[in-house]
Amino acid sequence: SLRAVKRMQSGTRRRAIMRLAAMRRSALKTLQRFSRGMLARVVARCARQQRAATRLQTAFRRSYHAQRYARKRQAAVVVQTQSRRRRATRIVREKLEQERLRQTHQGQLKEARERLQAEANAKMELQEEKRKLEQQLAMAVKPEALEEQLQLQRSEHSKELERL
Image 1 (tube, rainbow, N blue to C red):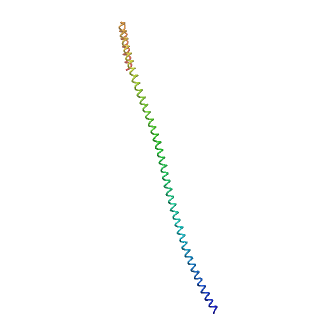
Image 2 (image 1 turned 45 degrees about the horizontal axis):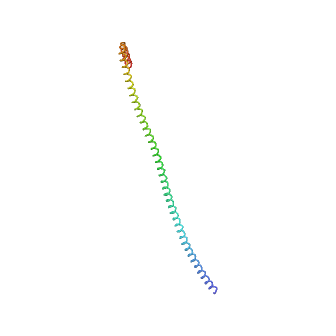
Image 3 (image 1 turned 90 degrees about the vertical axis):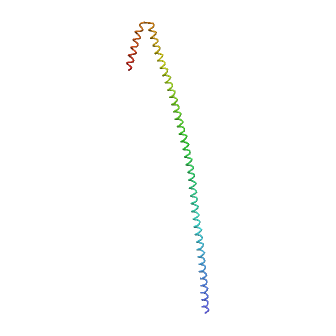
């Protein structure tokens, strides 16, 4: 019966050791479960932070580049506006200068025409007066002048009729 006692003691020890091992395994699984859960939460938090950081960087870069593009576009609009304004101003100046020159030339031409017309009228009046004086002189000197004067008047009369 010593053997039986030893078997009982051995079985009791074995059960105790197995219980202890099962408790250790359970504790170990609990520790592993908690550590894995904690690790998963840390990884998830890092992933969320990474996504949030990426979104922030994306939003910042988008905003920065949109502002930069808007400034460049506005600068281009300003440069184009100034260029168009300078060109339009130059064209208007040229047109005004051309108009001024045209009006100046027209005024000068009009004055010259009026002056030439006045001179031509004065010349015709002087020629007419000269002709009449020559006729009077011719009549005073010669009695045949009457006949010449009559001939002259007839020729003038026929010329006028031809003009009409």
